[in-house]
Length: 418
Ligand code: PMP
Image 1 (cartoon, rainbow, N blue to C red):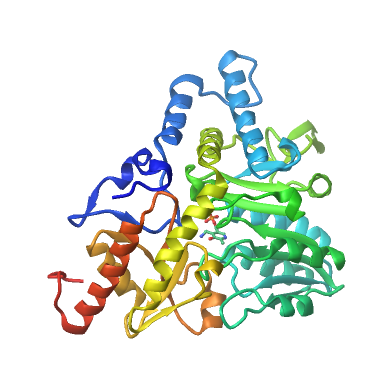
Image 2: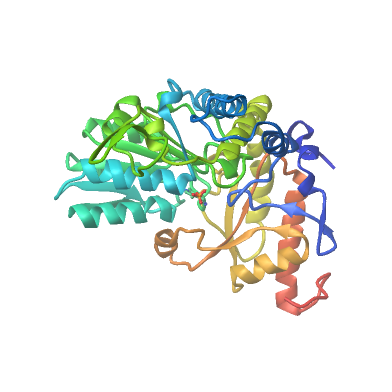
């Protein structure tokens, strides 16, 4: 059996286990990724040797913790080619990053009669915050439609983005349709109309080389847990001039310069956004995840995942009665594969696969407007990372045929209750 990109599989002890008597095939990476030993060790090392609160103390441990916390920020800045650490804000997640942009920056730049433009394939965390801004500011929320094969319709984007648009906020990669969106082109379009451009990088940052300066986006959001780091740590990147303009979304300790009884002023970015004790160990572990990904090489990761898609997608399409969402050309498809089997509920399919030790997701994937747009309630989703293998893709394909057979005839290897 192959061992993932550069034999990376052995770095992930969790993958080496049986589920329901079968070797685990973990294909739920779009929901969260597994963690390599080096990331786990960085957490343990921090708590065993350096645990202290950051930025406050003068004692040695506090200084060490602060140094590691800020060094991790520098690693993230280099990873996405941010101009400096001042552009990199620690948050809890993509959801928190997008909420902060919407509630603080969004509410200050969007006024009555203005427009906010998102797309039909957004995750709820890039929909609901903008619904709130639109409601509060009496602005209009507009949606860019999709082409017949599920890509963002750029002709429609040119219609929806107008001189009234103040914010354009689009996912860099879809968590359902398996497409990459042309963020650089959209940014140019937004800027031509005087609008700010925000990209949701939750599904792109773990899988390809992101260069925020080349994309020229105003803000970029992503989550550590989808790129090998623990849950509870995320990033909000902002252009320095936008961050100077944006007010903090939370207030309290650590983010202030001076506080008097009736007034306070803030530190400079990024610290003015980080009120209270941050997720110090999570940030340090994110730095370690960035080291791991950098060592593997983001271009190598993207190329390897493309190989998995080139191998799997044509075979998936050959399964009788399957509907695969998004482009059918593997070259246009990322490692997120959403599908339905005719007549079967996706939860039954996912439960059947789990009986074979195969972990996939079933549901609306926090993209209900997209489900409505596609006129389907839910889908099954298998999503790859660099530690997956072609053998595992075969297990998925075999598993799907078995689930079909089981529901058609109640027979097969599946002598089981679902
Ligand atoms: N945007 C996209 C495209 C996502 O796939 C996800 C996670 N499924 C999110 C945002 C939200 O990420 P988190 O739950 O880590 O905040």
